[in-house]
Image 1: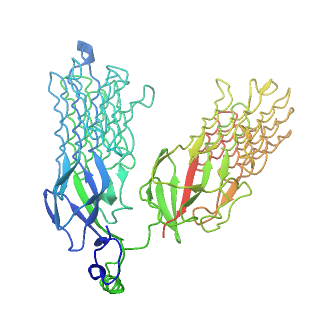
Image 2: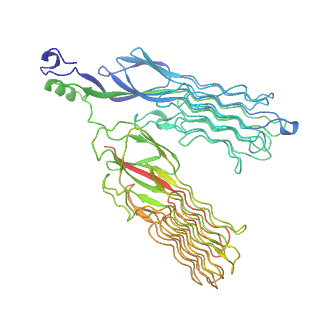
Image 3: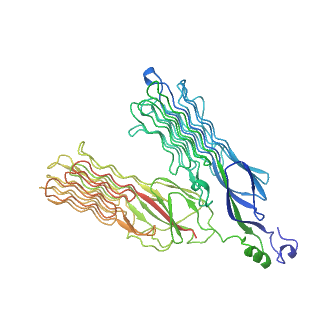
Amino acid sequence: MASPSGSQNGGILGVSNNTSFGKCTVTSKTSTGCLTLQSGTRVVQAAIVAGGGGGGGGTSSTPSAGGSNGGAGGGGGGGLRNIEINAKTSLTATIGGGGAAGAAPCSGGQPGAVGVNSSILACSVTYTAAGGGLGQGRGTSGDHGCTGKGGSGGGGQACGHPGGDGNEPPVSPPQGNNGASGGSGCRGRSGSGGGGGGASTVGNTAPNSAPYTGGPGGTGTNVSPDFPGAPNSGIYAGGGGGGAPGADGPVAGGTAGNPAGGGGAGGASTSAAGNPGAAGTANTGGGGGGGAGRNASPNASGTGGAGGPGIVVVKELNKASGVWSMQSQFSSRSQGTWPLAPSFISATGGTISESGDYRIHTFTASGPFNVTSSIGKPAPSDLADWTVIAGGGGGGGELGGGGGAGGYRESPGTSTGSYSVSPLKGGSAVTLTTQDYTITVGGGGAGSTQSPIAKGASGTDSVGLGITSSGGGGGGTNNSSPGGATMPGINGGSGGGGAGSGENGGGGGVGNTPPTSPAQGFNGGVGHLGGPNYGAAGGGGATAVGGNGSSTAAGAGGAGASTSITGSSVQRAGGGGGAVFGSGGTAGAGGAGGGGAGGNNTNGTNGTDYTGGGGGGARGQAGNGGDGVVIIRYKYQ
């Protein structure tokens, strides 16, 4: 409201001042108690992390006796809330303990315990993060009626039992994610426990095929951009990994999420005994790992791991509104308490680096890109440039063509420092808002084998900020070498190369499929139809077609594209080289930018991960395509 007189505001009429002069001081509380604030603080940002749930215990019964020797579920990460609240003089922080580990008696594994809530009491208002859900014990008669819900849900036990719900009780934005179901098997290698949910992602179900492991826990959340210097690098509330089953050979336990956020790994099993799950890291709110089952008497199964206790991290904010006199401004500035100018973008996710005034997030695995603060600067400071590269195609076997590079797309680069970009630049920078963006990084396609004869597998798509790049096409193959019919390369972001043959040359796959403008890649080359060495073709690259095969040489992979979005020039998305047969033949080189080389009666080379390079063709085992990458760049200061 307006001041009733100018004297209340230093002689200037206007709205009443609303200020917080906290100097952005960051303080961490790892035990319950009072936190005294600076005299000028009125608003704080707080990360409230509850205790993680305890992992369940593995079963001690044996399959030979009709028992169920599967693994137990990992504990859920504690709820994590990153919120802005009013606070004056002091606040009271209550730090929740981690849930107890589940036991593993002969009668069947017991569930872990739910983590304990953490909270802040400020200005007579309580703000609470919920404890992580318990991991289910691997009992012989079900899941003991435990649902495992909590801040993030606990993992389910083997035999397909569902995990617990996260964000319980519900808050907005969500404080956690669901735990995963246990493996479908009730015993044997597919009977692992599910991973507990984490603050950033859901837990993961154990795979039902080789390599068998427990289900990985969900990833934690990195709050360090908001709370510089916070303990454990500011990464909290990861889920615990699921426990491995007792089986007729060693099985690894589920890993903690990456970033782990303090989650404990699930227990591994040997051919006889089960190991305990690891405890969640102290003062991270990480869930405990699930215990492993045993395979034979009298060996023991593994207990669960205890959840990690929580933490509260507080930043005292600088904020001001209203009308200020010159005297008030001068006094605040001289004391170093005058609020800063409007903030730039602040975000988490991926691997973070910096180049001058610009911050770069590099995603080599799928995960969230969380824009965590409001953007006070006008355009172009609210814009992000991007590079999105899909997974490369696998090389073809049996005189196979090279895999095509993953589709390559990037913005013009003029909004964040005018760095050097490739000829494929197109579209525009993206305006960022405060929200969570889902980033998908495409995997490389598997290379083909000599037997059974098949084309290389295509890579999978990458997606970021609404931009999709298509997976590279797999390399073609010769279905009876030499002299047989061929199967051409596969269409994709860049096309796979055609196989070599004595009967008819293999055609290359079509690049830029589906079409984008500018093109995201080029065609694969054409394989040669005659000997003595029956040269296969190279896969297409981001900036060039794959080379054609000849009678004595295979085609090289097409060249990739270069960009300096990370601060230095890196070439990516080269096509895989083709294969040849017999002495005197020359295998195709991999395309510059991560393409794998072809083989001459030898295996092909894998494409380089995080470049989207195509795999090399081969007479035997062809190379796998390289995984893709998503890179985001914005101004942060």
